Image 1 (cartoon, rainbow, N blue to C red):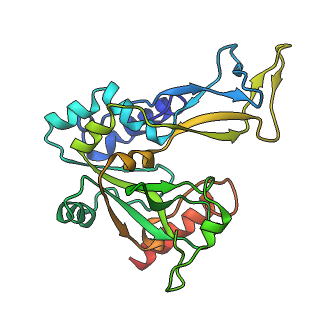
Image 2 (cartoon, rainbow, N blue to C red):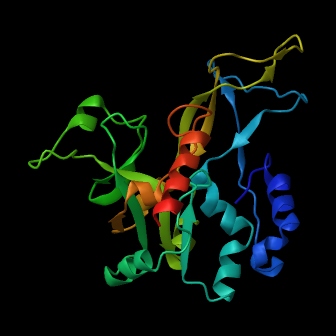
Length: 262
């Protein structure tokens, strides 16, 4: 799945590299939807071209986009039964993991997710939990400090299983989830826009809200799912910041260490 912003660069990259030997006919690109951005007063922003400013609708938009673009039907025709969905920012994500698939089949679930233990209570990751007896995830922006620091009888974090956006879905589950939109969450971001005088404003601080669907909201539509804890140093090297923690530098170091110790 691509966005309007990166679709051309992504498809061109695959073309230049001859689809990495997988065959053009086996690679399908589809774009996620977009939603308007609003300022702190709830007014829709205008972009540099004088149009409504739009932003991609989050990784949870993948189900709707797959349905609209015919990806689900294409997979069914190809006989695909299991689909792995991962975030593009994790350079250590294992795209094909027979153990995860085997676990799902053994547990008779239509979905599974990978987790790593939180490095500390304040780590900026969502955590697996159950909500109304359904599998769910609490995003780091929505968990209270008290909940984040709770421990069990063994002294381990009660909410310590990080959701690292490495999920497996049976095609039946994807087809069912895609019938209805997932809820949207707001994120406060910096957004360039044109003001009422037609001047381009480049903010130094967050000034606008974008709306995103999160893939883990789909879990609540399942009766159950399997969770497999993996080693952080082997499967989780995210790129979320330009510098410091979870940056290209730290992800590169983790990747090189993994290759060295493999």
